[in-house]
Length: 413
Image 1 (tube, rainbow, N blue to C red):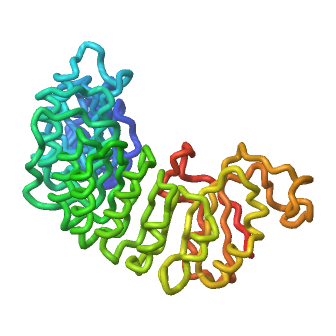
Image 2: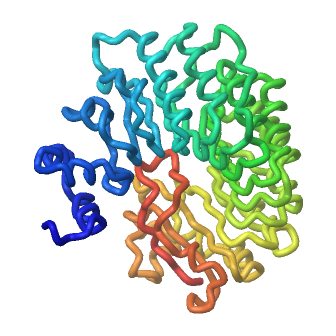
C-alpha cells in the first residue's frame, strides 16, 4: 500500500462506508489525513439522525446532501459544507422531545451556518407541523434572505406570519422555486419572486383557494418581470371563478419567451386559448382539461408555432373513439410536429360491444382498459423534430399519479 499514490487511495475510499472510513483514521497517519480529503466525502449524503452523524459532522470537510430533522445540534456549528440541505419537520421524522419552536430555530441556525460556508446551492424545506410563532418567522426570514441558492423547494403550508416578510437576498441567484401560495404565505412568496426575478428560470406554484385579488395580481405581476423564466407550473387547489381571473392575470403578464406552461386544476381554458398567440415560444403545454374540439381547433401553426407537446386529461369517455375523431386528425395534420399526450383514468372502462369504434377491432395492440398515458403523433418517428417528447420520463408529476415516470403507449395516426 505504501507504493500506491494518494489519489488512488482517495479513489478507493470513495467506495467505503462511513464506519470503515472512520476506522481508517486509526490505521496510520497517512490514511488519517487522506480520509479527510474532500473527494472522499463530496458525493455522500447524511441524516443528522444517523448513528455516526456527530462524527461525520465533526470530521468531514463536505457532503453532497444533509438531512436535518433536529436530532443533532451539531448541524448548527459544523464546518462540513454541503451542497444540498433538507430541513424536515415530519412528526415521525423528528425527535419527540424537541419543541416546534426549538426545531425552527435549529433549522434557521443550520441554514445560516451552511450559507456562511459558501457551498450551499439547494434547499428543501418541509413545514407540515409549524405554527405561527416568532421562531417560525425567524426561520422563514432566514430562508428568504439566504444568498447563493440555486434551488428552493418549500412543501407544506406556511403558517401565518407574525410580521410580513419583506427582505430578500442581497443578490439574486435562484433558478428554481417551488412553494404554495395562500394569504399566509403571500409575503414570503412575493419576496422570493421579487428578490430573484433576474435569475429565476423555473417556477412551480400551488395556489390555494381564497387567495385575495391583490395577492393574485401581485403574483402575476412579479412573474411578468422575469426575463429568464421559461417554465411555469401552477396548480390550483380549488377551481372557481377566481381561478379564471387569476389565469387571465397570469397570462397577461408572462413574457413571450415562456417555453413550458402547466395549468393544473384549471378546467376552463378559453382564457388560455385567447392568449396562445402571445406565447410564440411555447413548446410544452400541460392542462387539466379534456381535449374538446374547441381546444384542438385553436392550436395551429399561427397560434402556437413552437408547440410540440400538448398534455391533457380524459375522464369518462372512450379514448379509442376519441382518437378517431375528426378534430384529433385535423389538429395533427395541421401541426405535423405536435405530440398529444392523453392522461386517462384507468377506472373508466369502455364496453367494447356498445362502442361503435371498439367493435371495429382496430388498434388491437393497445390495452385500452389499462392504458394510463397515451401519446399521438402523425409524423415519421425517424424524422421527429423533438424526440425527447417520445420518452416516458417527465419532471412534471400529475396530481393523480404517484410517480411522473408513467409508461406511455404511442400511436401514430
